[in-house]
Length: 201
Ligand SMILES: [Zn+2]
Image (cartoon, rainbow, N blue to C red; front, side, top):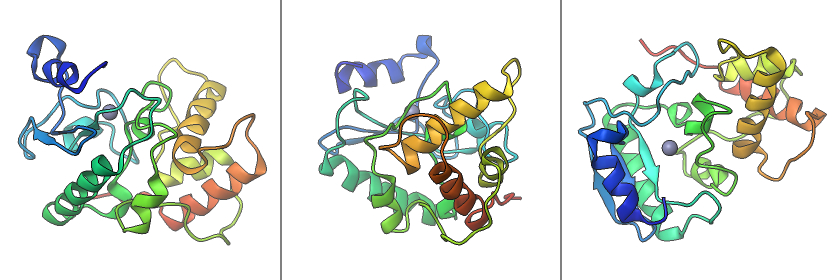
């Protein structure tokens, strides 16, 4: 969206069938659009770990951003405060904080490579990298262990792998480009074994 007003209008109009629980503008103004216990249509179809309806079991936060601009400090400060409250209120583990791009690689691009996941992780609000001595696993094996869904109807394995590679790099190796390399494999192996997806009953 070109402006936060335009985005908010869209998120409030039933015609578009899209909304989120929270919307944070660049100056840090936060609007709650849907009650936390209610379902917001913020994610669409997407999986994480063994959950194949992330949309129905998650709280969605949208950050006002064109997709190509850095996230201002004012916005991130408010995001961090909100995450702290939500994690406490709903007993969400750090591994339970994910991006839309994590649950729908290839389809969703946000929050993108300019979003600083390490900064969140440094404050215990997400996971980043993990132990550096894990066993080296095949990329897709490690990706699945971490939580990425490695099956998608109608897509072949190569397509799925390149979508996951892109989503993974957006979050964990934002400067990486080119084909899958040993560094990707090492980082995802560490992640998968440090933070295996835990089924939440
Ligand atoms: Zn989103």
